[in-house]
Length: 374
Image (cartoon, rainbow, N blue to C red; front, side, top):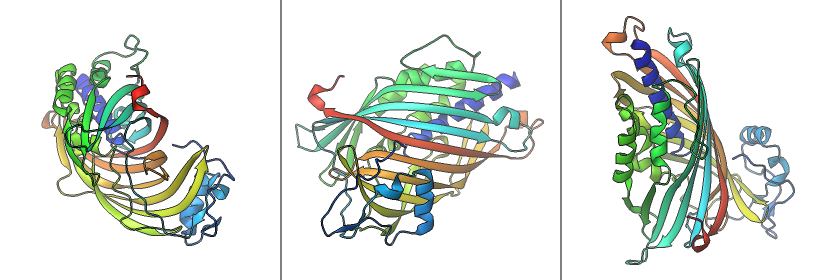
C-alpha cells in the first residue's frame, strides 16, 4: 500500500513539475551563419560591449553565433505587439532530470522525463471594443518518463495501451482532458491582459479526469497565470537598447504546486541576425530563482518547499512584432520534501531534491487565421 501511495505521489509531483516548464522558458534550431542583418552605418559584426564570458558560453552552445550576429550600435526598441489575424503554432520541449542524492528514497525519486507540448495562438480583434484577443488551443502532448523501474509513454496523437501498471498510467488522464481545450485572453491597447475566459471549464475537465489520488496535480496543470506567461514577455527592456546593453528584470513566475516565485535575471542584447527570411533580435540571460517564505505547499500529505535555483538562456525574437521565434534555457532548482507521519519510519527528516530542466520553444508555423485548420 505504501509503495502505491509513493508511486502516486511521485508521478503526480513529476507531472506538475513538467507543467511548470510550460509556463515559460525558452529552441535550438541553428541560426544560419553569415546571414546577418545589414543596417548601413549602424552595425558592426563584433561583440562590442558584450560580456565576453557570457558571449563565449553562448557561442560554445551555439557555434553559429560566432559569425551569425551583428551587434547593433543604434538603440532598438524591443516591444511585443501580436499581429491580428494570424495563427502561431508553438512547440515546447522539456528534458528533466530529478535526483534525491543520497536519500533513502533516491532509487524511487530519481527520474528522467521528456515532454513535448504543442499549442496554437490565434489573434483576432474583439468585435465589441476592438481590443486584441488571443485564443490559445492545446493541440498535442507527448511524454516519456523513466521512474521507479517503470517506463511511461504517452502520445496524444497515437494512444496505445498502458505500458505500466496503475496508478501511474491513469495520471495521464489529465493530459487527455487538455487536448482540444481553448482559452481566450483579451489584451488592452498597452498589451496587458484584461480578461481570461475558459480556465474554469478547463480545470473542471482536468480534475474530473484524474483519479482521486492525483486530483491535486490539476492545480499544477491548470493555472491562469501560467497561461498568461506564454503570451506576455516581462523580460523586455523598458528603454531602447543597442548591442551589448544589459538590464535586469525581477518578475513572478508560477511554479505549479510550489506557488509563485520571483525570477531575477540579467539580460544582454546581443544584436540581430537573419534565419531564413525572418529578421531576429537575439538576447541572452542568466539569473536566479528567489525562494521566499511562502514557497511551501502540501500535496498528498507531503510538504514541499522551494529553496531556489538558477537560469541561463538565449531568446530570439521577431524584429517586427517581437514574438518569440526560438529560445532555449536551462534551469536548476532545489526543493525540500518532508513526508507525513505514516511514512516517517522510512524517511525521517527532509529530502533534498534537485531538478535540472532543459527547455526549448520553437515557433513551428505562422499562417493567416482564416486559413488555419481548426
